[in-house]
Image (tube, rainbow, N blue to C red; front, top):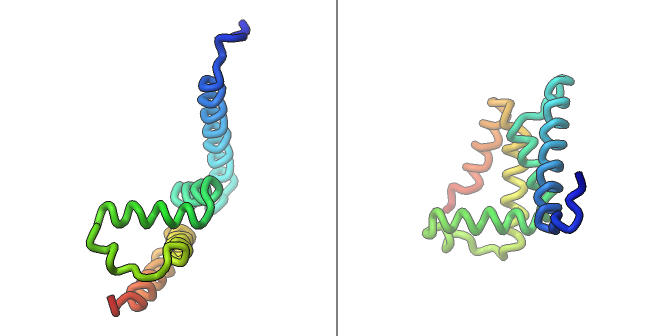
Length: 118
C-alpha cells in the first residue's frame, strides 16, 4: 500500500535514519567477517568524524568535559579551535590504537607526560 499524504517529512526522516543506521550496521558486520581490524570503537569514532567537523566534534568533547568537571575549564587557556583540534587528535589516536594494548599504553604515557605541568 502507498502512504501518500500520510507519509510526512518526519516519517521520511525517521526511515532515512533507520535505513542509514541499518546499512552501516550491515556494512560493519561484513567488515568484521572479512577479517578487517575494524572494531566497535574505531567504527563509532569513524561515524562521529563523518557526522561532525573536527571543530564541532572537539567543541562537543570540550563542552561535555567541562560539564562533567567544571574545574577543568580554567585549565584550558588555548583558543577553543586549537583545543578542538587537540581533542580530536587525541581521540583519533586512542581509537586507532585501542586494540593494541602496548601501543595504546605508550600513547597514553606520552600524553600524560605532556600534561604533567598542569
